Image 1: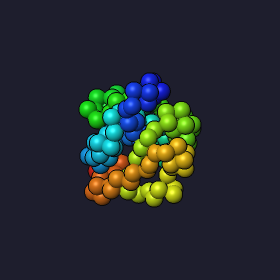
Image 2: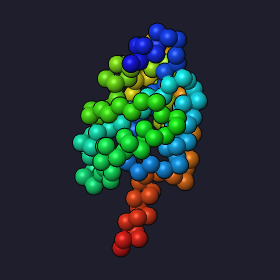
Image 3: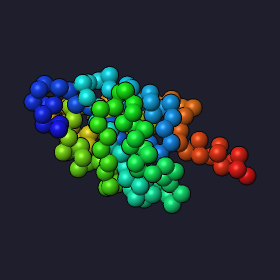
Image 4: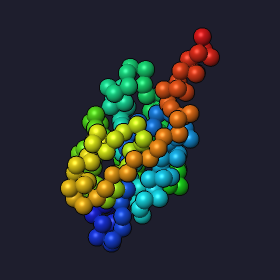
Length: 146
């Protein structure tokens, strides 16, 4: 699909994450990412990948649920799961023009940044909405349970 979009002169944007509990911070990053180009691809960690990265109590929502929510967002064009701990293979397959990550990253630490830049693309870091995080939401919910 990305080859067809590239050949028609479309700008492809890519971002990725677990998107375990979708919140306004995610919406902000996705909306901003989409504003950088014509089509937004979102790589999403599979359930096994989330568990390896975040611990045995995650994900809260399964892959299908997370993908369905993302697919319903106006700014998201394609949702693609990946089982590895990083999306590097997916980035190399999609060949985005622009790679986007949240403000808790620096360009030099973004997986795939070297690949995208070496192919003439760029990396955009979107500031985080500090008051929103999945970990914070889970902490609040756990404190309510107790």
